[in-house]
Each structure stands twice: as C-alpha cells, then as structure tokens.
Image (tube, rainbow, N blue to C red):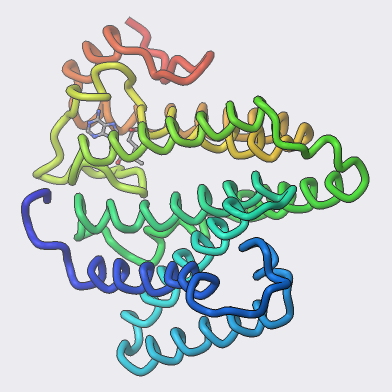
Length: 292
Ligand SMILES: C[S@@+](CC[C@H](N)C(=O)[O-])C[C@H]1O[C@@H](n2cnc3c(N)ncnc32)[C@H](O)[C@@H]1O
C-alpha cells in the first residue's frame, strides 16, 4: 500500500517506460540538416524513421539482456507504452495537422501504463501482465482499431473534418478529467480495488465510501466511461463517438449490476445504505434493484 516500497515489477516498469519515452530526446540531440524545420518532420523523414527504429531496437536489446522471462515481459510492454507516449508528444508538439492524433497516442499509452503502475502501488498482490489492460477484450481491441481506421479514412477523404477545433479541446478535457477521476478512485480504494471483480470477500476487503466514493458509487467506471468517449471527441470521430457511448454504457450497466450483487453479499446492510445515499455516477444506470 501507499508508503511502502514499489515492488520490483513496478520499478522495472518505470525504468522501461522512461527508456521508451527517451525517444523524444533524439530529435533534440541529432541534427539531420537544415531541411528539418519542425519536430514532426523528424517522424516523416527517412533518417528520422531510421533513428527511431535504431533507438527502439537498441533499447529492446538492452532490456532483453538485463531482464529475463516475466520481468522482460513487463519491461517490453512498459517500454512500448513509453515509446508510444513519446511519439505522441513529438507529433503533438510538431507543426502538423495530426496534432489530435498525437494527443490520442499520449492518452491511450498513459492510460494503459498508469493502470499497471497504480496497481503496483495499491494492490501488488493482484499485479500481473493483465494489469496493463492491453488485452482487455476482443471488443476493446476492435473498438481501438475502428477508431484508428475512422480517423485515417476521414482524414484522407474529408480533411477539413479533422481540423483542430474547440470540440477536440472538449475531448482532451474529458480525457484528462476521466483519467484523473479513475486514478483518484484507484488510489482511494487501495487494496480493495481489483481489475477483476471479486466474487469472494477477502478478509481485508472493506467498504470504501470516502473521497471520490462519497460522490459516486463507481468513480473509476465514471472516469473510464468519459475518458473513452473523450478520446473519440478528441479525434472528432462521429461514428466512434456514438458507438463508444453506446458500447461503454451497455458494458458498465452490466458490470455495475454484477459487481453490486457481490458487494451486497459482502457488506449487506452497509452497502444498501450506501447505495441509497450515493448514485452510481453513470448516466441512466442505477445499479442492482433491491426488492424491499
Ligand atoms: C474494477 S474495481 C471498480 C470499483 C468501483 N466499481 C469503481 O468504479 O470505482 C472492482 C472491485 O472493486 C470492489 N469495489 C467496488 N466498489 C467498492 C467499494 N465501494 N468499496 C470496496 N470495494 C469496492 C469490487 O468488489 C470489485 O472487486
């Protein structure tokens, strides 16, 4: 828990994430000639691409040398997420029409990396490769790929639709607030938070009703819900905005009901009282019905 030392896997993930993120130093350190005016050109220029490929190969070789087996699997994932975050930053800061895609890369990679890191801090016993949530579900992967495809196709066919405007900034704000709320929920719930909904009560499991849990019964789901829709508003993907809203709403409605059956079983009257006072926080989702 908070205050104790970060477990080995957590420390390795931090180092590896930072090594991946180190890609942002290359455009600053290497001079390719005067025709490179903007950082973004660095990614499109052949020399820039070669430098990035060499950098990531060297880092990966280094990780392979020092970490073996399960530790390497943690390191390579964290490094890949740091690298994606770095490339996202390079694109965001460059003079390009792909700015919001750079923001998106940063948002997605930060979300997945911080899920792992925060789990390592609050509940190291539940920590595994799944804590990155990279293989959440087939539907989740399909949703991500669909959003990349929609963005690219619309950018090629109707580029004016993808111009940076105030709507993209609203998306960015939703992503930042959603991410903040989710991580605040994880840190508040501590070891009571688990990516896998628990059906058996652990001896140490206590009901959390303070902090962000005093405002919403399911703050981490509220954060994730708005974060996911925010990513699509940021990309100005009209089809995915709608699809993400419907799909996440259905997912969380089922998840909340499933979770509340266990929570009532674990905490009985205490949870029922809490449920009366605090709403789920998710629009039009009231949770499990109790016949009294
Ligand atoms: C992925 S976490 C989600 C927690 C919560 N639904 C949220 O959105 O912040 C799922 C785990 O949290 C536990 N949990 C949910 N609400 C809780 C609460 N108020 N106090 C303690 N544990 C809770 C559940 O038992 C489940 O194992």
